[in-house]
Length: 324
Ligand code: ACO
Image (cartoon, rainbow, N blue to C red; front, top):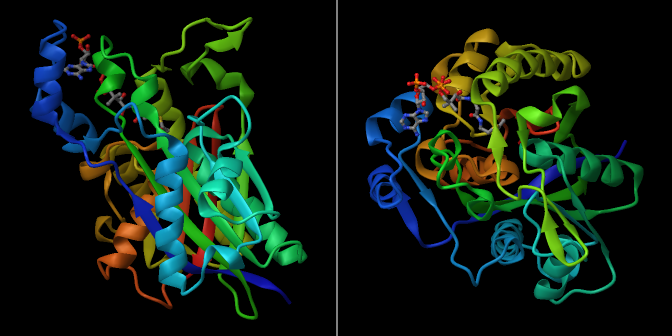
């Protein structure tokens, strides 16, 4: 049987790094009060990176993709599928994936975006895995890239301290041996309002509010429940249990969501990859970013079993079990 496996990973962060105290100062100038202590204690976030006006999701995505190709010993010419998970595309259309293709200088292969907010990377990985297994792709770039700084309401302290910008990429290749073992996706449109950016473009103007809105406590409660359930579903599909998992690589939204999920799965805290302290919540980029950081630091090794999982606006959620 045909399998898909991770041949290489890469990531990119914009150079501007804001610590919590940088953000405290920036918000104080607008009359908005917050503190390093509050942010660290409630979220585990210590710093995040923000792009400037001249950098878009496609730029971060392209840099991450080039590093993933290099890690896999491939070039852009080998790629026959590009999927970008993003909720902050460069344009309404064409897709960010088409723009990445142009920046990579390769032409002709399939390229499209997937929009499932913070679950976007799990959705994109699941689609790419299915296409590789079906024989319609052999070498797929699966990228999560976001510039959430553009959606933040800096007068709303309950949301603007949580997010950052960045990109992560995985090169997924056809293989005789398993890599992506099982995936499972879900969505529940009843919960649209608890996490959304409701504005849209209409007649040359932005209609509705184009800034991020979140009911934090409602998201928290839903997230822990669904993440525990989908992890168990994907393990069951693969005939495995949590004791087979070497590393949980969760969406990096909030340290308390990650700890609660690990507890629910009876996974020790030291088996959870954590980068939210340095990146904040980078939405669809957070899982591949965390994965790349953990691989490059030597934390994750070849031969280990990974449980990736994400949850986000929609409400959407999903998990992937991967033999790395
Ligand atoms: N600085 C200081 N005080 C603040 C801040 C801030 N940045 N933000 C809120 N507060 C205050 C509130 O005003 C409130 O004050 P009050 O009690 O006087 O009214 C108090 O802190 C507590 O507010 P809550 O919203 O109840 O705080 P909570 O403990 O629930 O933490 C948080 C808020 C961190 C957002 C939490 O709800 C959470 O983690 N939710 C999960 C949502 C999440 O992580 N979303 C990420 C995006 S979703 C995703 O990626 C899946």
